[in-house]
Image (cartoon, rainbow, N blue to C red; front, side, top):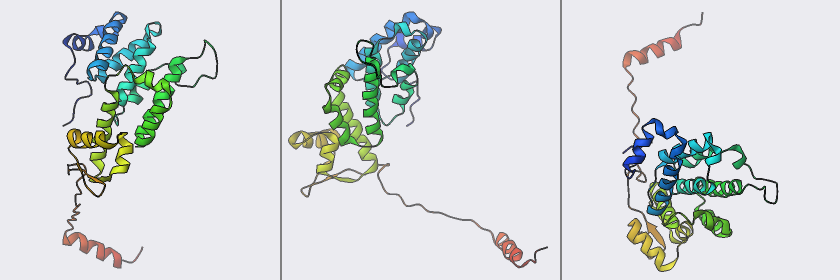
Length: 242
């Protein structure tokens, strides 16, 4: 089922009223949107349309921008990959935050550093380098600080990775999947069995149930050529060039 871009089932009524009225362009609503972003981080909900509206307000009113809120929005977009939401948010950020600062000292842009870090994670997810994603996430304490405000971030990422895997595969080696999910032993068995509903075989393979995405389907090509069309082609083959 296709979900509308501006749809969010858990969106509060007062947020919906702002988004559908002129107040979405009112700088005074930034605080309300910021509180909503914090709420999304706490209860694992997600509302791209509202978050983009807040980034647009920041774009028009840069003095109101809060780096912590911006990074929280970007982290939330990672939890819904492979959607294009991360790129959509980047296009609303100031150009200074999209390049790595070469300056040192108090003038260095912490937002630019955070955006670059999160962009690395997004690129790894986009290229399906899930093991690299987890290795990079563990490689720097800054990553822990960036994702720390999003409750259940790692669990959300594992669910998204598993959903992506289930769309492309019917079976995968356990050792590979352990790296993709960053889980080992009993925690791996519990997640794969209880959350995903997959089966771990004794030969080291993990079986993924068939679905409309990973099920092989034969393609039947039918050509309906009438006899008179074929006869004209034969006739032209014997015609002398003028």
